[in-house]
Image (cartoon, rainbow, N blue to C red; front, side, top):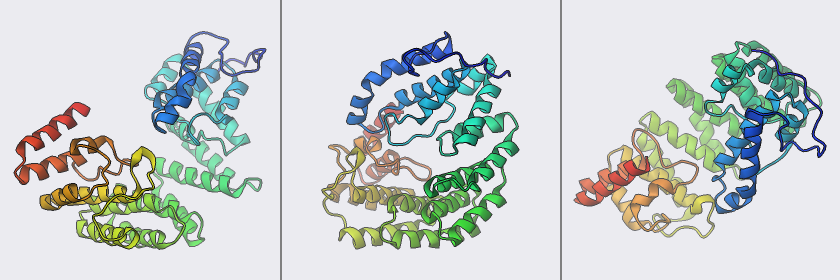
Length: 363
């Protein structure tokens, strides 16, 4: 790999939207221009319907770097577009394209330099991926550690960099160091919900019951605190219980939580609708349905389907594509498979077949 050639002078209009050279940069620029026209409408229609736009944007940034337009690339990274926040990564097939074009080391060096200047830039994911590919993990970890120790970082940025450092340690298979850092953050009451979620994720990934026994009570404590972002932690808790076949604990927690915060269940949905038209209570009902499905409790799945009127769809087979934050899928089967099994077990074989065919068609 060779580093990109020196950056040419910026265009007269100072914009980063038009690449001055051909190849990847000009193609990505054209894609970005074409997609920018519709991005506001896409975001108005659905907050997560701009995947193509963000993919094009990431290719465009890579194209700017490859063309030697470092300042334009940095400006594009710093410029909010579309979603409130984003994290640059290497797009699908992008790494192969960089390798073939001979730009991998140059892009890595660019990301290393900009993060040295400004650790708050949202490019740590791409930087870590390239570091692993180029066997520069130690250099990447050194930069992350140095960034955390900087005195000039605002507290919110320092928290973000700490999370990136933990992810980098895990990517480098230095799990003990990552766990030590997570436990230290929790002890110091720093970013506890995020750190406990990390602890649970590691416990699930390693199938480490002792680690989960340590983390799950802390997760419950986070949920009980007022003002915390509960939905993410509840998702982590339920996923851990399901993945470790502690279905009774998942059911008991969800039922108690729903009754405590939303009244007796099931009942009608809350009026406060969130993204995708699914409110928080319905989100937790999705989780409960999947817990029952995973346990093979078909009658309970049917009961929720028949008596809860907050699903937000006209037909149960539409539930697969109408969930919040992807929480309708835990364990070995998706929501529609659980529904199909419940329908079949309760004497509705044609409806069960329709659900399976719908799921296959969506796949």
